[in-house]
Length: 427
Ligand SMILES: *Cc1c(COP(=O)(O)O)cnc(C)c1O
Image (cartoon, rainbow, N blue to C red; front, side, top):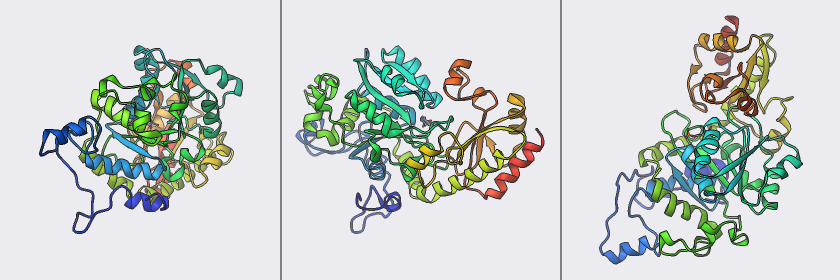
């Protein structure tokens, strides 16, 4: 599939049926797999042969869908996880453990911030958060001798800052560590971070990839380009024998192309078990088959909404990286010339109260803790997803008390704008 364009990969990647086989990917709804001899199974446990034995480690349906996302991103290996949270946790914990340190962008998704700052902090992994537009000196100063990775989001949810992928990749590589990019909002249809020097991509497939609000899921994709063996002291987990897995050295046995994902599967999925159910993987694949058709419409509707809001007297500010004049418009044009995402955020002249009145009066747009659905939805982050943050943290995350996040669906733009207009009249 690697020679095909992104549209073909969306539709046909990951699964090529043989003669007389099902046209749609089969849901292999089985916890376990049968073998003729114990020796056959032993080879699988030793990672000497490839094959399935227990769905907590690997399942054929999941692997087909992961293979499609791998092809879409242009990577060498991929795995599905039960959620985006699990994907980001595994991506970091696969290389950064107790006593290690990670540099992360301050505007990342609230759930990821909490995972990193609070929960992984308790596990002994420390994070330094830097603004996406920090100076070179600030970025440089964030690194420590025990730094193991740099993390950011292509387009941050919901701050809508755009990561300068090339710049962050360069800084990471200068310190001998990989850049991990959460590409949830842009999707590989609009941006493929590997083309700009990123080493590992993560996704909450719950968002545009599923696209129908049907299944929570995540994915990790490896570019296969980061040379772990050039920094064996930094990445002992990949470059020295794993005693918990028969003494295998992942980077040697599976090469750069397979080491990261094999280790994440053999250790983290084995021990934490955040597998995506094959049923959800099937639903995710249905979403992926139309991702390339839906993304342009999401972007078109969001741009129309952003332009309308920008000119409205009751609106204090509009943030949309696809809107000319936006602080991140230049970076968006560079990394996502065909469109950014369907999410627009804006604030009100009347402050938090106006935001709440506006939300109450929407008819088409539903209030949901969700984005990137085919149906338009909206949220007031300060009272929902970012509720646990204090004012200083909110500010660092790019969120004000009057900010509303509108996730434009794929309905008629005219209907969305009429809905926004009538709700604004009530403010
Ligand atoms: C939603 C989201 C996540 C978390 O994903 P879940 O599937 O909800 O666990 C992580 N990163 C980004 C950018 C998101 O939007």
